[in-house]
Length: 367
Image 1 (spheres, helix red, strand yellow):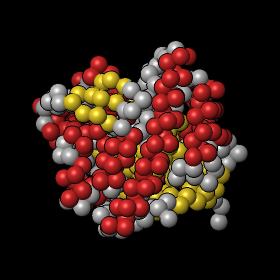
Image 2 (cartoon, rainbow, N blue to C red):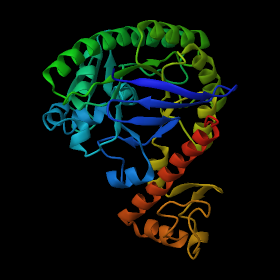
Image 3 (cartoon, rainbow, N blue to C red):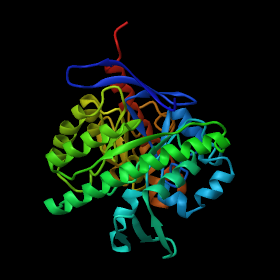
């Protein structure tokens, strides 16, 4: 079996403490996944991620397909070996990146034709091709190819997008199952098995979200994701959509909320029953000098920190807060030193991972 999910404890509000068992390791949930877009969590080395306690990170199918190429990564033993990451990996389908390049794409029933943001070359992604790329990358968890519905979207647009996503979900699953059996038989991944999650779409229309969830559950994916959120909709709509979808997903399978959000959001959604989350925010914000702390958000570029000898977060015990001052981090930003992005990112990831650790402890089953 590629994946097994065990719920160890649950609350009346829906939060659950679990264990996601993958071929090589068990991941404790709820879990936050740092985003490693191009085979790297920007500015942070893999050994540091291990020290921080990252158990599962995300790779981006679109970017790795374009550079260095999925076939090259396959020949070098898969993404785990290529990036020297011994822990768990999840790859997205490339659908969101194609969605974000709307001016450079053309959608049809068959798939999406788009132009590379690197050199303008033309490429065509189908559900089958997305599966082939992800299987070649060798991630533990792969995602079905979907179309992300923009916000705001009219009813007709949301219905058409859902039609495509449901058709592509079935094609993704059928191709994934057939291809994985062939790959494992040929031992291309060193005997590793892979899992596939379906993605619930439907915009902000409750009935479309329900339809999407129910149809995906009938297909029997290994796990289920909620996609198409944090694309500009109000937070209240995000919460309502999550609350609508979660009860429709099987309790015995992992639930993944894609691309969300601020620390208080990931804590709230974990307590509602989400098992897995990812977001570029902690790494992207860090490169612009925004730190997340127990005292709130801190813009380290501020002049008032020029001679502040205190740690970035007095309540944090990460390697950055134990060693460096706010004044020094501000100096690195002002001087344009690359170390700035590294130290800021390490702290932000430590903070996010710490939020999830605290939530897991609050959901810990009684002895």
